[in-house]
Length: 145
Image 1 (cartoon, rainbow, N blue to C red):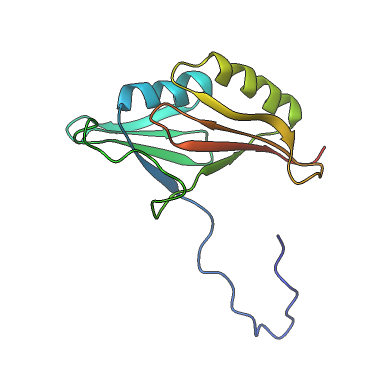
Image 2 (image 1 turned 45 degrees about the vertical axis):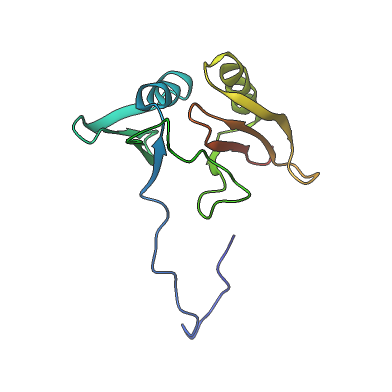
């Protein structure tokens, strides 16, 4: 997306500069953290054991994982009936990275692939959708070739 050219500066500029972090409440901090560390090769940058929470990063975006107080009684993720996060979309470098990631997700415990890499709307962008441990939907998108 690009901002329209405005030589007179009459169109207000956005006041935000992208995502600093995305926070997810999960039923198993250990399982979801392992997915980000082992499958996506994120780094852990901090943790708060008493909360408990873990802060993970790919070097661009930080993902904050928060342990649900009582996973047995927590409301499961439901993209069609609960207000809030529908899915998290993360960009990958290219289609080769998307294919590698697809193989890793297939082998990762607690993951369910919703659809394998395919064209997004019939165009050059390709994507895949999965549920990571804990049930949060994550989409991975490879830009045009």
